[in-house]
Picture 1 (spheres, helix red, strand yellow):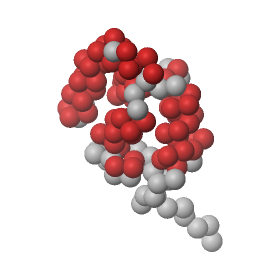
Picture 2 (cartoon, rainbow, N blue to C red):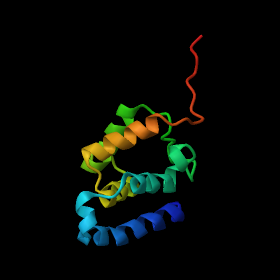
Picture 3 (cartoon, helix red, strand yellow):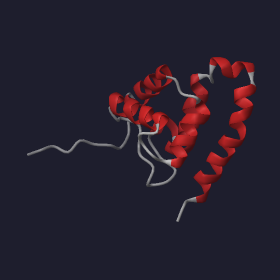
Picture 4 (cartoon, rainbow, N blue to C red):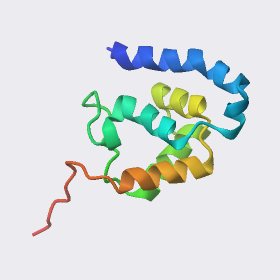
Length: 117
């Protein structure tokens, strides 16, 4: 069963995305804070507390992993309807992806590394 709250959120983004595309400010892209807020809508503040357990924690992940994942969503190499709509609506550039990845990699979360003993 598909969770409805994220589904409706993405539908809202898709509805608003054409308005962004026609806005002069959209040519320069959304401010970084707006892109972070879009991520926080599902992954929680600073990417540390997702709204649903099946959504990944972004905080504390390796920057290169996050950058590759976002790039793969943007290029269609990774398939997830919510992320595909998000990346398309936000029109993430390579710089945006790297900036988001660096930001989330520096955040703290409940993720831990198991010691091998």
